[in-house]
Length: 164
Image 1: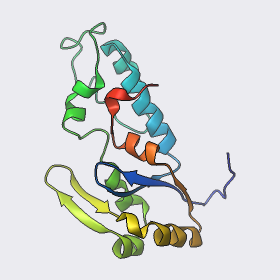
Image 2: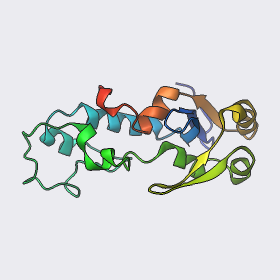
Image 3: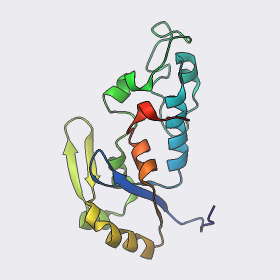
Image 4: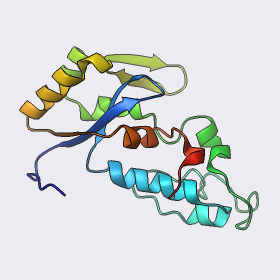
């Protein structure tokens, strides 16, 4: 693992397939979030799904979402049938995170805010701005890594085929 200055902002970005644009996320939490998504996707019974420990994300199979009476612990679990996943409200739209992690002036220059009917707004960063934007972030001291698979996993793409 590369060492980095404690004040360095780490970003992971990639091509978000669902939106056909670049998405930027916090590099310090991305791997942990991905592990939580993989763990929930790997659950085969409701009991397992309920017990997945979530630090970064909320558990859409957790007790605040579903009663145990509705789905006993030994009932089969399929992440693609969860209401929040079907509605595409979990995990949070990956392209919305750029609004939190990118400096405002770079959002204005390289992206555009798009308002969706159901999920609020997200930052659309066209693919052709990648080289310039990444260069500018690095000049400002950001550590920037491209990982398309991670970005799309964080967006919930292909959850049914995710294995732990």
